[in-house]
Length: 181
Image 1 (spheres, rainbow, N blue to C red):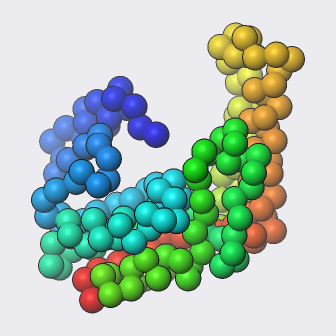
Image 2 (tube, rainbow, N blue to C red):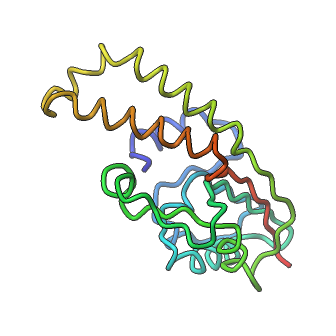
């Protein structure tokens, strides 16, 4: 989730560039865009909203525009979100399968390119784990109200469990380019 401060910082960093930063619900987006980038959001709109998400993208995409969908994905059609991660890390999170993504886009947008980067995301998660562990002495005061280092253990478990899922190829990281059919 992006905060107002993060959106303002992004706007400052993009000053002078042809970039429009907006902090709003995807269902409230209007207008036409040459390029749309959805970065790590599709997994959080719930399966029941996948089609609506694609409808909004199609509606907002200019005739010759491109839509980049960057999403964690599951190799399993019947992926069930991990109950622990869903409860403590990503409420309502749902990792889509390739079939679910193409089904949501069917008749609206055509897949132009599909890249799989999951084998590299293991390294990213392990780097986050290392940085988190190293920074914990400075961060711990912010989480002192949580009993017995609970936040520390939970976050380490999350990072390592996800790294393992990517390492075992149970999860993927996809970048999918879609366009008008």
